[in-house]
Image 1 (cartoon, rainbow, N blue to C red):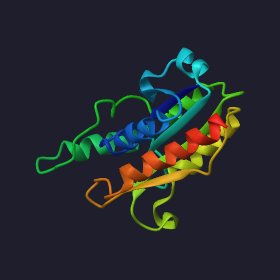
Image 2: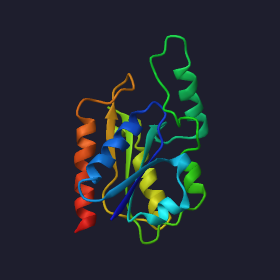
Image 3: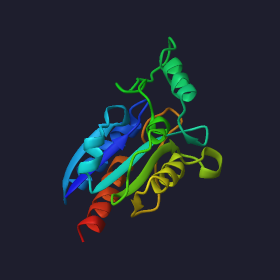
Length: 175
């Protein structure tokens, strides 16, 4: 079985979570991982499970303007933020606009968001899940959030939780 983990990341947190999800899935299947900007139709067609995630920006998936703001923040003189290598590439919104065909492919959605009440932060994973369904993917899990602190660093334990979540996803698909 082939899984594909697709992610968008600005400061690297979602990339780290995607890596841990790929590690968790490897316990039961072959896994490819790709930033959304490098994703090809062939990669998607080869997958039996697609796990898609991105950061939560202004209550939902990022937009070109919110990614540009991240780049600006990382470039400030006293900033400790570091951009992910693919931070300035197109994001998940743009990918969904291309109309990916998910018919017959199982999927799951995740996000990273600030460790606060989701009523305040929003959850990109809900929008990702909605778009996955719209494009014919079969969701096998509720959308999942992984938390970062106010300094844009992963909360302790979130990487391990992502790996465990993915192990569960892999078990559902292999059954």
